Image 1 (cartoon, rainbow, N blue to C red):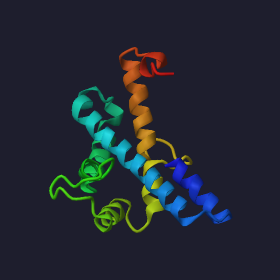
Image 2: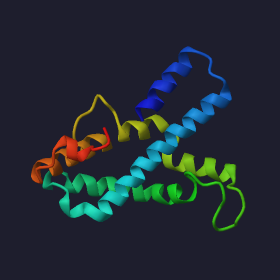
Image 3: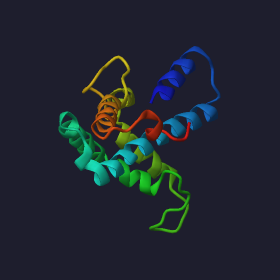
Image 4: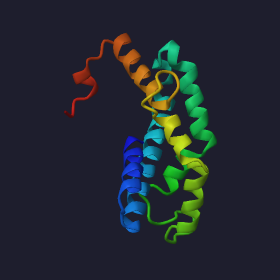
Length: 151
């Protein structure tokens, strides 16, 4: 989400070729959708480990992701070329419709819901997930190195 915000700022200051601009926006949107989808997978498998002070907020994030059908979109469009239902290439008009339904008319509002660096817990998805991660690490004595062994 931060990349999209930075990229939008650059586009206001300079002229970026429309093809590059569209591709970059789509990449940032896809990454946001993938991340939110991964949260649903995490929640489904590990919701019992979520610290008490984060449970309700995580549940609300899950409901928000489900309401926007983000996981369905990810399963059908992100990283796919062929529509499984029709066996044909994905319809770009349908893709644009789905992206618009997820991000809404005010894309900035959606992005700030996910990650507004000026806001703290519990106002954004990222702040809730960071608090959840830190709580799980503390409760189960997991070190930073164990949490991220791919450094």
